[in-house]
Length: 207
Length: 78
Image 1: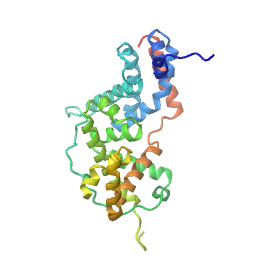
Image 2 (image 1 turned 180 degrees about the horizontal axis):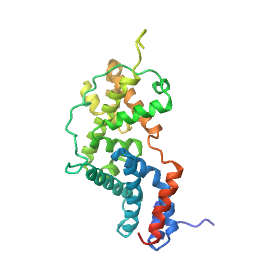
Image 3 (image 1 turned 120 degrees about the vertical axis):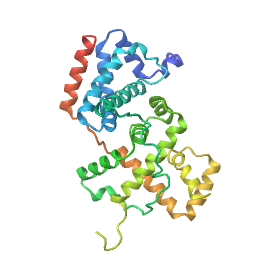
Image 4 (image 1 turned 90 degrees about the vertical axis):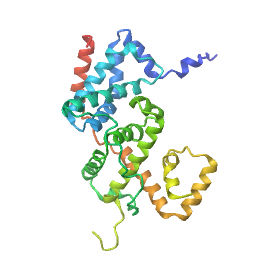
């Protein structure tokens, strides 16, 4: 006869068990958590710092800090979201150190009107990315996203690239839900507008 | 519905969180507004393209090196 699992047990995220084991001193459980999320943490750090060495440092520091603070992890948010919050803070701290004397926050440069009203309304070529090699395309995508204001870029990366929900993004960045929504819309529109330069359908005879 | 009203709902539309009654208004607007059709399609494509291209890979060699450094410090209690 099948045993009936308590509901709470079924709803527990598999990370919770790993966190519990790591807390009680099982380092191999933490090893599994690091392997599960290191790529994402590295990507997020590099998107924010825009510097490979900083991203390496952030990745190490974020996992070490999370390990030290495991006892403070409440379990009412996902371990991954909690970890991302630590990595975002570490990334911003690193930026501050790099730009001594200049304030760096996710509120930087967000008071722009660019992109709130789409201007370039030319349609794109079908499968426009196929007009470029993979390395050309990656260069275009990197350059385009790096041009976004920090506060828009981090929201777009967490929400659209890494797949966090609006609520998780708000919690991670300490922003309100309307602020996340407004930044996401403007980030998406600005990226779309900037990518249009490369992807728009060419007129007949145009090179 | 005006284009500005449409843009304000663009994210909800893309994320699939539009109420059924608003959906028909949006569809009606899109039937008569090519600009908003282009904006919707190219914004969707923008998201898809960023989602499907990993811009910052963590190379395996570097991954192993960082991993080792992290775990050694964890074993020593950081």
